Each structure stands twice: as C-alpha cells, then as structure tokens.
Length: 205
Image (cartoon, rainbow, N blue to C red):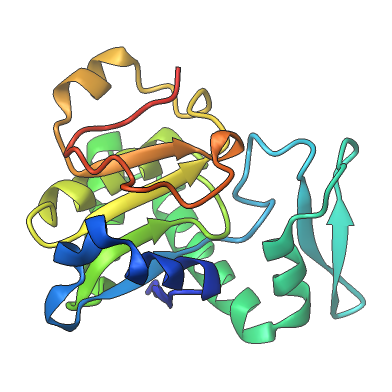
C-alpha cells in the first residue's frame, strides 16, 4: 500500500498559475508522491542527507560531500507521520523491485498498478518527489505508465537530479509520448510558468 500527500506550501502556489487552471477545474487538487529522502536518491551528493535510526530515535546523517542539508530529510527526522508515509512507499516499491519471481515488465506493471490504485480521483497535478527520486529504471518506467494512463485528466511532473541513473536509453524518450514533464532540479530556481505542459517528456540538455 502506498499513499499520496497533499500539496505542501510551495506546491500550493501552482493553484495561482493561470496556465494550469484547466487541470485544476472542478475542484481537482495537487498531490505529491514521495519516498525516503537520501535513501531513494542515488544521485545525491552535495545535498545528501537522510534520516537514520540511532538507539530507536531518528537522527540526520549527512553524506561525505554534503554542503546543504536536504530539507525533506530534516522533515523525516522531526515528523514521525512524514517519515512513516515515505518509508512505507519506498518499502512497498522496493519489495516489488526485489521480487525474483517477476520479470522486469511484470515489475513495472506491478509498481504502476500499485501507484494507480491509490492515486486520488480528484488529482489534477501530481508532483513526483518532494522527497526521494527515481531510484531505478523500473520505478521510472512505472511512472511513465501511470502518466500515460492519466494523461487526459492529470499533469504529472517529476523533479530529479539526473536521469543518468535511469539508463533507459534515448529510444524510450522518442517512443513514449506521455504527459510527463521531467525537470532537472538544479536548473530550477522558481516554479516554472507555464511549466512546459506539452504532452512530451522534457529533458534538460
């Protein structure tokens, strides 16, 4: 079982972006889907931080090259419900990835179905990863399936540090015509307007 989160303060600003109004009409909402910070961030370096358990208590652990502490990892140390939700999401997806009885295609399908089954019916905009990242190609491709299945009713936006860890190849980006916009987070300084909602996968050069 996985769970989506209501929009945080930053995401709520999207309600005021005129270009997104059609995706939020009829009372549709903004949600995020999150994983454990640091643990689900294979490309993290200068922002590498994660919540760890020490004597039964959560504490922050920075990486060897950390220059600025990840805000979402800090949240997971302070707020038990936030930590538990993100950990449950991460554990559920990793369990499918680790299932040796499933083929890669079956794993992608199972992850996509797991996400789809709990996607709020009133979702208009879905932000993938306030916390966490696309930690492997199966998980990434599952989100492509979810975006395809919901392309007529929702915009799916994923923020990532890099796509190199996904290793899906250029052919995938040419073949998959879905409403999934991928933004490389280091190039984003403000909420983009109008967010390049072009029904294709957007990839930074």
